[in-house]
Image (cartoon, rainbow, N blue to C red; front, side):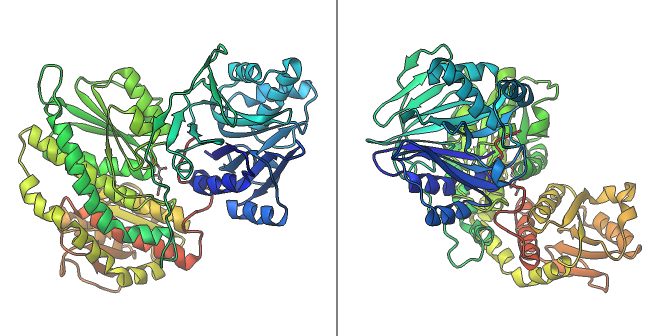
Length: 609
Ligand code: M6R
């Protein structure tokens, strides 16, 4: 993963770099660092383990100054998150590089450089980049050629920035697989892993393509191809707003984002209606309705976004009555795929930059799927740009690593799409009936939020445990998986989700009085089956917490606690039950004192495989 940011200006750019890194810290927060070419044309750096705040404090005590600098915020892949592995990496105190990605053949290249006498001081795959470029630069003094030679040898994915003290008026950027965006200023230029970190400085951008090498000077930017031919960068104007997310009165972004769901879901429904109307008006070459032409659907995503796909599958197959497969993107990429005609390929990604989802989309395009559609929360992201069509969630920036409002707004988009597909396929038209339900979505979510105190009591109980089981049936199996992911991610309590009927096929052996079982049991056709499953658990001494949406459906007892959420239409049940699970996970984590918004070992955007 990692975020990288570079700047060249007529003034000291150190605070620009640290501000950029703060915005990129969703890509990793294991360590942070900066390198500048200072006023004496010396290469200087500061780098520390831990979050960007540590680097900012360090720079206060021990400032750096320079009008050319590169910075990095790390999610460790090779080597522990300690100072010696933090970027920027140097070679012979002359060149500095920062890298996002993974060099797959690093051991081969490292051995060659060791034989040439270069000394490695880190355990990373990235350090070899600095030494390789330095070796080449010493040979012929041409940085573009040095980079071309390096790119000819490196395997893997990368976005790299490099500065050399003998070239104090330019910075170099090159990429394959990982994103890099140039921000064009006046007497200043920038480059970053994402556009949002740049939009405080400019509205003119260039997206680097794989294989491009950019030479960025204060007043000129040249793009070189793999043969060394120079072209001008293609500029696009993008009116992106710098995001100023603050926690307001909330102790964590996660809680704030949970509480933003009434508005975010409502806004998504409203925005989506217009976008989906456009989709439903589209025609194929033969002048047939595009949506009607879709005969099956394949959905990919990772983590929470994958769970959104699983919920959508149950809706699409029930309501539109066309087959829908859902695959984890990292598996889809490398498994044999049979492409059926007229299949709509949907990739779901909050960030739109997840490497596995992007890989899956690129594979789908190569395989010639009928149509690709992205559902995401960042309009300018790679996945949204590379898909034939996209639908935007109106979640607003999601800062907490644990996805909350992005998930429920994804469900809103998928629900709207399902209803529109049902109309196109002349299935039972639920949209009129459902209109009222959707109009009340904010209210229903607020009612769930108002049960927070009851959920805190459950959280107090669960926070004493070191494992939890979560059960669901039908469309709520995906919600059990999502609830378990949330719990693991922020509370570090091992939580396993199962389809309730599957319990007796092995996992029942785990049941005893120390393993709390959370059961998602809305009023639906499966509720009696769920009651039997609960009896099977209590008969074996297990303790159950039932989350339902109808009073008197379950009897409290010594072994059974019941939480009642507001009654809901079955299509909204997954959304409302999710919110209850988000609050439980949040409060368990709060009681355990974990780093809720930036849990250990994780990053918000997973840009490596
Ligand atoms: O940005 P994406 O939706 O593609 O991210 C996919 C997963 O990494 C993400 O949903 C992850 O599982 C969440 N942080 C979990 O809360």
